[in-house]
Length: 160
Image (cartoon, rainbow, N blue to C red; front, side, top):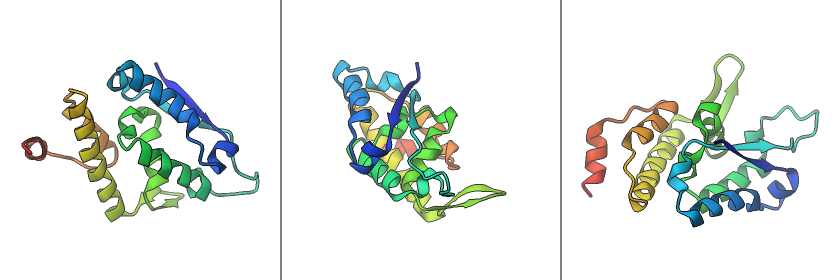
C-alpha cells in the first residue's frame, strides 16, 4: 500500500520533518519497517511562485529539507516508490545535476557514484541490522540510477 507524505512550504521552510517522521516512526515502532519497501511517495503543495521556472530540486529550501531528512533516515531510499520515480527525485534533491530538455536530468557523474555507493553501504548495513538480506532489491535500486553491481561486490561487503 502506497503512503504519501504531504509537504507544504511551511514545513519545508522550517525544516520540519514531522510529516515524514509521523509515518516512518510509526513503521519503526511496529517493527515492520522493512515490509514497507518501495511504498513511500512525497506530494508537494507547490512552494514556487507561478513564474518560477525552477524544478523542485533547484529550490534551496526543498533541497535542504531533503538533506535533513536524509541525515535522519539515510536508508530511506529503500522505502521510496521507485517505480513512481521517487528514487530519482530523491536523488536529485541530494546530488548536483543539470536539466536538459532533450536528455532530462543529468547528474554529476562523480557525485552520483558517491551517492549510490553510500546508499548501498547504508542500506545493506541497515537491512542486516533488521535481519533481512535483500541483495536483489539493492541491485535493482542501483540499476535505476544507472549502476550494475556484481555479486562479488556484495560478497566482499558481506564478508566484513
